[in-house]
Structures are given as C-alpha cells and as structure tokens.
Amino acid sequence: MSVLESFEIDHNSGMPVWIQVKNRLAYLIGAGTYAPGERLPTVRSLAIELDISYNTANRAYMDLEREGYISTRKGRGTFVAERNDVGAARASDSPVELVIDDMIRACSASGLADEDILAMVAARLEHRRYSA
Image (cartoon, rainbow, N blue to C red; front, side, top):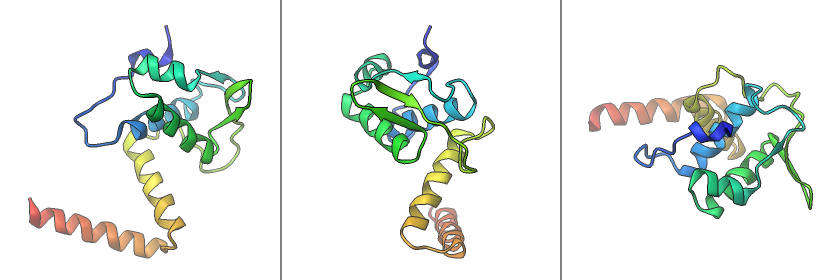
C-alpha cells in the first residue's frame, strides 16, 4: 500500500490541488515517512495514483524541488533531498502551517519585512471580521 493512497484531495477546500499535494509530500518528508535519498513516484505515477492531472503533480514537484525537499536526477528519477537546514518541515507541522510558511517565503521574496507581513495579515483578518 502506498503512503499516498490514504491521501484525499479536498476539491472544496479552496486550496489549490497542487498546494495540497506539495504540503502533504513536504509533511511526509519532514515526518520521516520518506527518508533522504528515497526514490519518489514519477510525476506521471503520482498523477495517476492521486487522480490528478500531470501538470498539477509536476507543479507540486517543481515547488518541492525549488524549496529543497526533493531533487530530480535526469534519467534516474526524483529523490528526497538531504535536508539539514532549519526550514525543513517538522512532523508537527500541519498543512495550514506549511501554507503559512509558503506565504511568509513569498512575502519575504517580494521584499516585505516581517513587521509588514504581520501588519498585512492583521489587516486582512480585520477586513474579514467586518466582511462576514
């Protein structure tokens, strides 16, 4: 039985499928379910196993590779990368925490300081409170 067989895509969550897949794989890698150096399913077999499009699976893998979770070796496959940095997912990271990490990385990459990120999140929460 594959580790991902129990993983169900929630099409009603509002979270893009590729992010759900990426977060699940990042969690499994961080939790040690997939060990460093272990071969992962091909993009095509992942797409078939999860009943998603090839492009969706490929986007999740591309993002995981960009973030250092996996590495692709041409002609050999995709493998779990060695992760020694502090930013590696921990077994205690929930899918929501992984999305928050992605948001923080994206904001930082856009040049926002931590204080600006906090202010933007606070403003969005405030807006949501009064819009509901």
